[in-house]
Image (cartoon, rainbow, N blue to C red; front, side):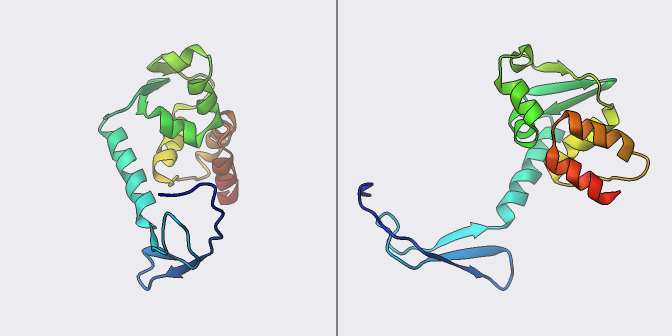
Length: 156
């Protein structure tokens, strides 16, 4: 049983495997609950997770919100949107009426830009060109998607 009062010094050493698909962390000093066991992190897990969340979205499974923008209806997961955007996090976790609705009308954002940014939230990929950059940047600003704003600015 782990004694939380016991102080232990833990030092880790990362070893990258030849196949570059995972990293093993060797624990060099004793840790009561671990007893010098190896801790393995899979670099593929994040991609697996994001791919499956996107598949769920495309199949409209477990989606708990529909964004209504122009003529588009975009099903999504509140948790994913909140993780990607402080705008959505405030909307879904605060006292706004939208926190209790399943269909939310979005104003002042181009529907094509919104579709691209939602796709980016689920895939980490976005196509930016001279035709869409003028609508993507304002949408990213409204949604407070800082890392996407930098990404868009870097590609122009």
